[in-house]
Length: 176
Image (tube, rainbow, N blue to C red; front, side):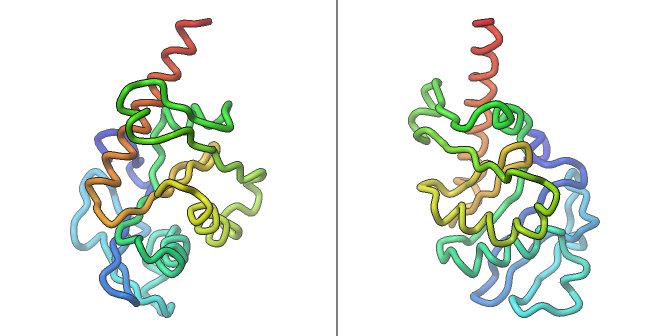
């Protein structure tokens, strides 16, 4: 996902639920183009000192795991075409074959203001995911939170979405 520019060198997060009370997530200092075991940390749902070393997104992942039993893997990514398309559109409706086959029209979640986004994100993102028919939520100008029981299925869905948004942007530029 790093090679596809879904993560920045230091931006993004990925986690895996290890049992009903623990999950593994990248550390706050993880470099996504060279991830190794030292850049992952296992957290208990009960917060302790290890949370200080974890990704800034750990609380969001924690709340998703607590509220969505189907979540085995979670990622926060920033695919550039999807994020760019979300800035000007409230819905994403794929026009390409694979996009249409994989997903219906997708609503873009509007955080309204980024002033206190990180204080609100840990509650608003799980709510948006529960409301969604899909296993991801696109947050306007911010990124995508996705979950799945299968890591490869999650990555595939994000890749199809990103390609569909790229095609939509190319289509728009050809029309203007």
